[in-house]
Amino acid sequence: MISIHRRSGSTRGRSAAALGTRNRRLIASLAIGGALVLTATGCSMISPQATTIAYSAAEGTNVYGSGPLEVRNALIVANEDGSEGNFVAAIINRTDDSHTLNVEIGEDGVSLTVRVPANTTVSLGSEEDEPLLIEELDALPGTDVTTFFQSGDAEGTLVSVPVLDGSLDYLSALAP
Image (cartoon, rainbow, N blue to C red):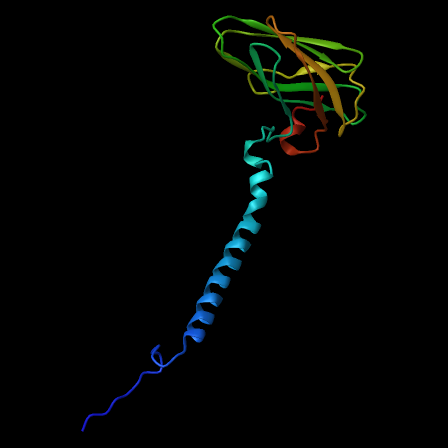
């Protein structure tokens, strides 16, 4: 005797309408999923990427456009009343000639100059190079001081330099 058994997962016996409904649901699910993915990631197409924005990842500020000398992490460590402070920065000379960095701090224009030999870095505030003392600062810690930087034949640039206090351990030795 021969018996015929049908499996429950077989498409035999199903109507064409049932198969069409199943395919439409699958296509609709895929379309909704695709739209959700595009919607969730579409904002990044028009938003600026944070990794392409240049910024100073330190307490100080980097100075661009001051001339052949590069100024990195420029900051002022001031005493409590802001009457005097020490100018701290790394000044890089990648050229084959010595250059002088001219710095004018604040509205009163306290002037500082630093001579940087060819192909060297001067780190003001390091063990080798003392910070530059600003005797008439008039800027409280927590504020910014408008500062002009110029070297070589460049016109120079105006930058806001942060004024910090010596409350942090690594800055305490730099306070006047």
